[in-house]
Length: 398
Ligand code: PLP
Ligand code: TYF
Image (cartoon, rainbow, N blue to C red):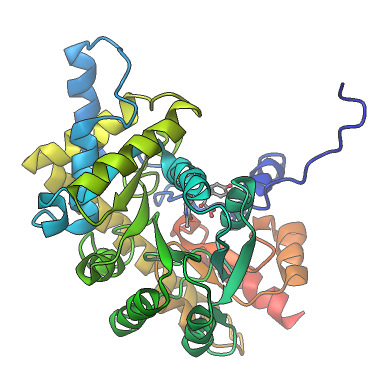
């Protein structure tokens, strides 16, 4: 049965981890995968999460099945993070949320449901986008195309190009938007631009799907929800995926959620019933532990404050690494100005390094980056910063 099976291509980002792990050099640095490491190069276990976990373990709970849509306390906390605790949409019963297996799982149940809802729609993702967006929507059966997004010349968003494209799309087209901290470019829309995108979605009858994987990594929980809040104020229906991999440092626990804003309570009940059907035929119901930890942190005023402080600590450390990298590259005497790195938001920077330069970084310095020139700033620390800066300066000069 397997004789004719070909090797599938490796995930361009996760595949780098394998090469990194096999590298024997002690000076090696992995700037490839989007994971937050602390100044010692370790993935943190947040103190707020640890406290919630200790309480949960002490309680010695049985492990029954969860409801198909997951933990109700968790789902309600997710809605409040996205839409704000005083959201009229929540009060009106216009929001449904299903706990999902990470942000990826949320995107997949959303994609599978959209395929049933509107099988002929096309999906549009930013150019460039997170590598998995295309593959995921294609595997749900959609044709996926790009809308213009990044402008390499300005290192910002080609907003005119993006708008012109969105304005030409057919009604019902599905638009995947990075709610904040764009992966891979670090270039986000400003508030006014979000307002314009909302207006275009309204005029054209587009279906927005906001992917929120880094809430709290740019400016803070509420500040990073501006896009979601702009859509929620518009009266539009939309989809939103949440991931708590990064902001709760719970990568392997697979904690995420799919939320859908509907026109009203009755619609919500019908939509939720269909989403549950998608879930049932995929994995029946989500796992308990990670969602319970997030719900536990968010239900306690004390743990929530502790989490927000820890999240601010991660955000501030990334910012310090951004300015540190800019300064350290400058200090090498490098002719190229890297000050744009300090303006980009979230975990990533599109450095402008070519695939050939990225390869030299890997071969000569043991520094791993994505071939597109994307680096993860959250993998820099006070010990490897100068080494990375010197390597970047060296490959640019070569
Ligand atoms: N969406 C974007 C834009 C991401 O960068 C990521 C990264 O992990 C995800 C979704 C997936 O999140 P998760 O790891 O929780 O599946
Ligand atoms: O972009 C990143 O590096 C993160 C982690 O298939 C990731 O979002 C990368 C690839 C992938 C799943 C997660």
